[in-house]
Length: 333
Image 1 (tube, rainbow, N blue to C red):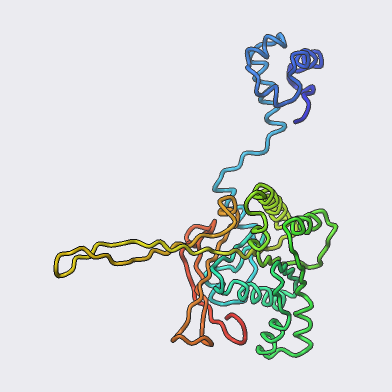
Image 2: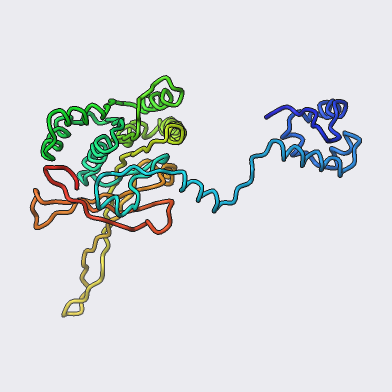
């Protein structure tokens, strides 16, 4: 906290400041928190003079007061969107994936999270001609997969090479490495030209290493990651997509059923609940959370889709919206 100094236009002169220092009132915060009558006795000033000095300090050092609704409107107007290139998804969100914020793709294993993230990365690099940084924490990224999708879309060899060249891959194996990467982006030690989108696939793969006794260390690193992410989102005007896991819990309930002989029997019923990983701290960090669920048509493996539901959004009216995406050889459409 800043040290208390002479304030122009008030009774806080240098001799008065000296008396305050002798009473161990050193900083501006000390002066603002101290009792008014005690300050008046120490400084030999009237209470109105003390209050005037406080108001002057608050005016000089406080942040401007902004109405909450005006602040939200300001954020919305200043936030651009990144078109996912997936028609149904863009229509559901009206504007695509929001920039300057963190978006989460969550779902159980095999729900299509990586498929959709790859497709958004491909479409972003293809349509905007900007750079995408894809962070792989599982070691299963496949450039051949991207190449096949682009070839199915009838792109020439030259176009495929140009698009793939705009998707940069970084392999990260620990939260420390991830935090250092984001720190370097923040400090300008790592510069990626024309960066538009950053994808992390996935966060739980790194955080699960800190279960048990190392939980506090993991939370500390996650907090650092969130702070760096929010800063570079706004500073670089980019979007960040984080892939998260869902766990599935099934509770068994026993329901009484009476048979013909009036004897009591029991019928099994099951209640399924799904929870997003990364704990309570993470739950409200992303401004947009999309839940993915794999669906099949006519039990045909080659004819499947992904149901995308908005679990959470800072924009009212978006929650519980859903759309169906088709999955085929040409990617997610």
